[in-house]
Image 1 (cartoon, one colour):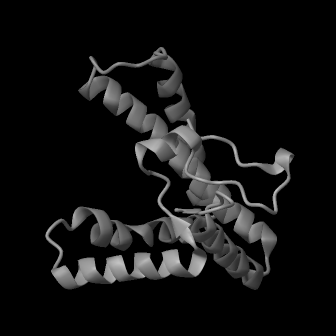
Image 2 (cartoon, helix red, strand yellow):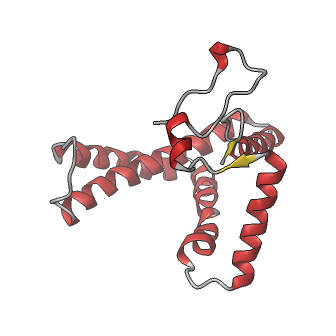
Image 3 (spheres, rainbow, N blue to C red):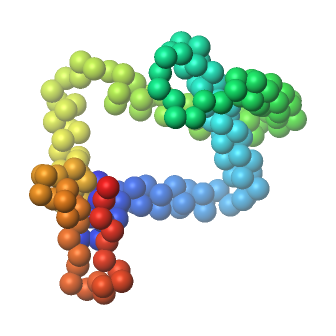
Length: 169
C-alpha cells in the first residue's frame, strides 16, 4: 500500500522502523551482521537450488536467460561447504539465524497455506487493513484504468515540479 499523495509505502517503512528499533536495542552490531549474513547466504543457496529444481521439473518453462547448469551446481557445492563450516565454527549464530527464519513459518501457514479460514479471521484481517489505511492514509496501487494512465498518485501542491512522483509502468 502506498501513500495517496506521496507514493511512499508507509506501512512498509513503519515495519522497517520497528525492525531498526529492535536492532538498536540488541546493541552488538557484529553479532547482528553475522545473523543477517548467515540468513542472506542461506537464502542465496535456496534460490539457486530453486533454479535447479525448476530446470528439472519444468524444462519447457520460458526463460529469457538460460544459465549452464554447471554454474549453479558449482555454486551450490561451494555454498554447502561454507554453510557446513559456518555451522561448525559458529553454531550459536547459525542457530539464531535459523530461528529468525523459522519465525516466518507460522505467519506463512496462517496467512497463505490455511485456505479455509473462519469468517472472523477474514473480518479481522479486513479491519486491520482498513485501520492501517485510515491511519497511514494509504491505498493499494491498483486502480481504475483512468488512474493507470496518470499513475495512482497525484502530485501534492507542496511538491515542486522536480519532486513530482514518477508515473508507474
